[in-house]
Image (tube, rainbow over all chains, first blue to last red):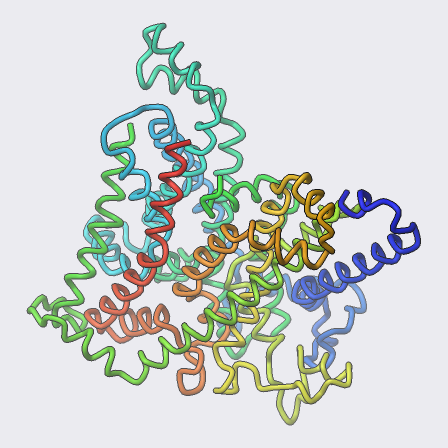
Length: 292
Length: 286
């Protein structure tokens, strides 16, 4: 586009510029992929060929023993596997994502389509909830969860992620509904439909794209969360995978290829979602910077 | 319809932050709560404490390197990608991929990459690559060297987050109309001048949002420190969020932890609230 519009610069010069451009991009890609290469290659190596000195060497074949040990653990050595924690994360992410998306959709609809006093203050006040350092709410959060009997449980952790997910999902849906013509809502009002009726019959059917963006965003951030997991769940059998991985990697008896196998297990679900549905992930990313 | 959410956030964000503020003014520094009033003592003690002073300094060093790295690299990548090349989305996918994984995974991987090695092991990770490239002089102890400490964590954080600034700048560059570039060319501007005089100034709002969003992340950085280094030798990679967690949940110094948390909250609020108010206001006007 830009290069092409320059015109008579000469085909050879343009080709050379293009080659340099590709070379730079390839070098940069190599840099970004290096850590991922070590992660994947090390997880695939056999125990015999794992040595730190040969960190950068390709595996001689595909071995899944590191993976298996990260997943199953080694009960003889008192090492817990990450398998159960992987499923904890699944059981955490699915309901927490759905609930926070539904709440965000209702909030976003009201904020985008209904004028009421204080809306100008309410919206930024809700959004500030996604910027706060969670350290500033952890102690009362633990006290409250203990009092209502949810401390240390998966439902407790789900509840926490739903509440603190409201700001970002509200933002995603509000931005999306702002693009829905107001006339549609007005037509609904003429037909005698109320706040709820319009939401259910008109807004929800228009919402799938926003639900995908919000769901992918929440899935990724809840799966990747560490702070809430480590604070709210103290028992290893309840902990999500990030917390269990940190325990595994912090243990001196665990070989580093097993640590890498565990890290790959923790990274794989969100990486797959990202590769398959990347453009929806991008939209969530942009929404989070308040750029629409 | 919004009432349940609003009520929940009023309690869980504002109520809890207020309660933490109250805790920070008490003498609760043991397992059992003690709500005896202590005024600002926890804050005074903090600013006297060696560890907290290092933490603030570390946060400042981390922020400068992290922001410079993300803005510089992100902008450079966006400029390269803004040429309408074939395979653009392939490269974009690679640069953004680290954003999809957890800071814990990043920390575990980079702890090995920036491992200083040892006499028996020889060089490993990045140091080993430097050896192979005959750049052995650049080898360092990374996070085990107290002079580097937190900056090693910043390297990993830049790897993870620079794709984000790339995405912001790329969207910004794409939103600049071609006519503007044409006009600049007609005026005889070369490629370099075009960026310096036209595009970079237009992209200033993008830079501002990148600095605010990444800046608030660097104030809160926690997971990566936990997974990669912990406090480090002589607290050289300690940060306020880590100190807070450590002193509150391992040391039971609740008042001290609460004071650190409130200081963090104030810093984040100073950084983000003006931005938040400004961006929501322009949106309402639109």
